[in-house]
Image 1 (cartoon, rainbow, N blue to C red):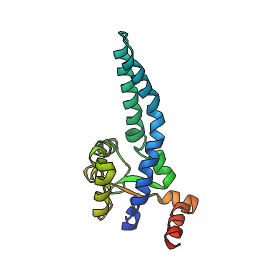
Image 2: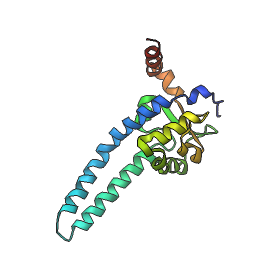
Image 3: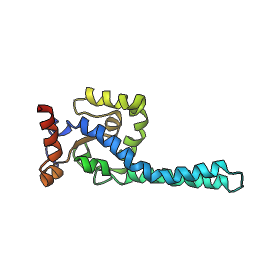
Image 4: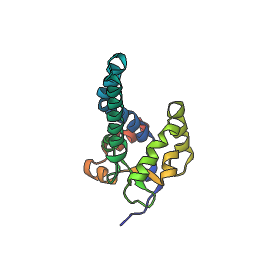
Length: 165
């Protein structure tokens, strides 16, 4: 059964920015070997280079699709989100679906414009802190209450303490 959502649950903009950086760092090594394969294939003159480039591109895209779309379905979390105690849910608090995850990722192109400023402004202006991808996908990024209970919300406590001091 879905629980009521408070606006405090969506006050995670700082965590979302950190998560974006963290997930970029995590997903880069996943794609790096494929990018190297593309580079090697593109710099060669043999007839197999087109296949090497195509294989590298496809493997890289599949790896990114798995990390950003398939992995979060159900759990609502990438590894970066899990580490930072946030998750994506539908606005009715149901689990993230593949279609919603794909819509969120596709709109990262728009939200990521001007070094992510478009998405950051959208989150700051939205009462539920949604970027454009969240609005289209009908999703919210919320504090993971299960993680708060498990670790005593040490990350959130550290943020509160740092704001006071």
